[in-house]
Image 1 (cartoon, rainbow, N blue to C red):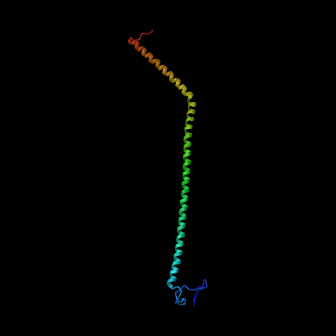
Image 2: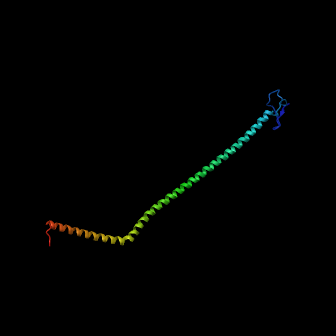
Image 3: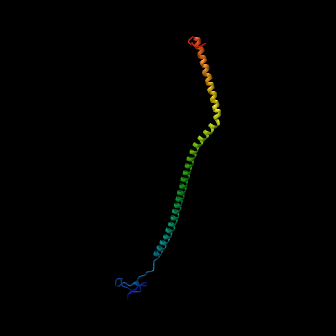
Length: 147
């Protein structure tokens, strides 16, 4: 009598002759049941471990992205600071020239008056030196000028 497969409902002819499936016990043993329970527990543990690992990797990825964002922000701030310092340097040179011109305008009359006094003092010193030299030359008898 051929044995029928429940799925296909047709006779099973692949068995060797003289083999009766009714003689076999297909209920699992306690070792097989324990192995199945161990295997399911292992799968659950591995699934939880993978979820925890993926969560950790996601947190690391978020931290990396946050650090990239901070670095980009710091670079942008550095560029802004460099631009500001460049502008400040340009403006400081312009301001120095402007302040020098303003100071010249403010101090101009005083400096011209001081320069005139200096020229007058220089003329007086040269005149006195010429007089001293002339009297010395007369004393030595070297000078023969008008008297």
